[in-house]
Length: 441
Image 1: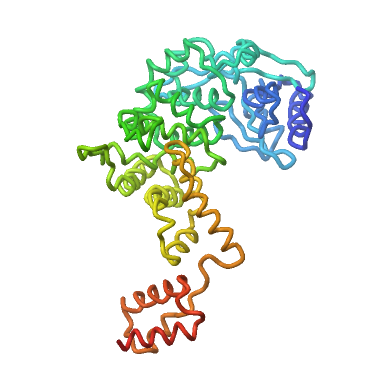
Image 2: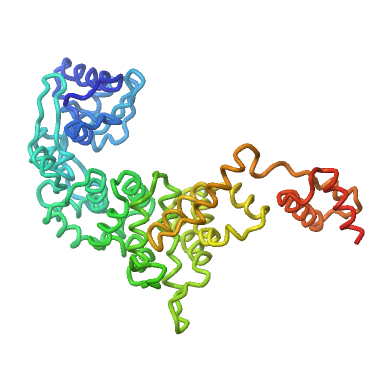
């Protein structure tokens, strides 16, 4: 664990030291231990101890008990919050998420109730000793995600662990242990019992953290989870495409390739990529010559909206993703667009995401990037001027020329702004004169 030290690291050591000096056992636990063994700087440090929640609160008076029945306290200390949990064994689970009760136990017994071996190790930063009761270090070396103990029991306790297995395997480029795979397949249908919001959070983390998000999607499919949490996406596997435009194969294969090729990672791009062709299976027709997907972008946007709403995404993310899905076929015609239309496209709030989506779409199919290159060149030409400059003609100007307040005002504002963007008039005065003539004709 020869990583650089920082302020968080030093304070995390201090918390353990204070607990130990008070006579308690205290170790770093779980993900921070795993990450440091992998040479990754942890973003936070969880601490496990034999001190009871009341004893922890006594030592760190500003603490908040977030699960006293489960032995969990959040302790603020020198500007950081540390989750301090008492070593515990979980009793019976009845809701596929939480135990009915816990009993406080030894570190070894605590390790045996955790999800995966790579997450079940403890480290004493004072003595610099690793406490591994379940073979986690060996599984790290083998690059394996394996359940602690009985895999069927682990997934019956908390169904979300099935998605977590995919997240850890995808994040670190690990394989999932065969027994763990078998248990996931046995319990896959239980994922439907988990709240949609928890599924969304875990799924989003998986795609954003995965080394290759497309392979994470493929793993979800192979484990039998995808058709339960995202059935419309799973249906893309069955949808063939015209080979002259999509030599790569079906819609899901195309989408997997795009996800793996993303130049950057954010939530909107990821889900715009995932859903951009979700409308193809429901719009597919054959005209006697080839398969066609008329209006699949519009239908896909509607489907993406419903899926994301059901999964409790924020309104802003839903709006941005559905806009990208709805617009993704516009790029076919960019070289034929009038200047005004092109400027509106480039000035759109999601244009940069749409550009990357278009690049991915082309690269994972026919490979032609002429429209993408054209837009990049156009952007460079507009670099020294606002893409969407202020309107020369206002609603007041239109009304002063005799147009009554109402929808007609908006109509003439759009007409004059299009003329402005198209460069049809050199300045405001000329455009105003042009408008006067139009209104008189």
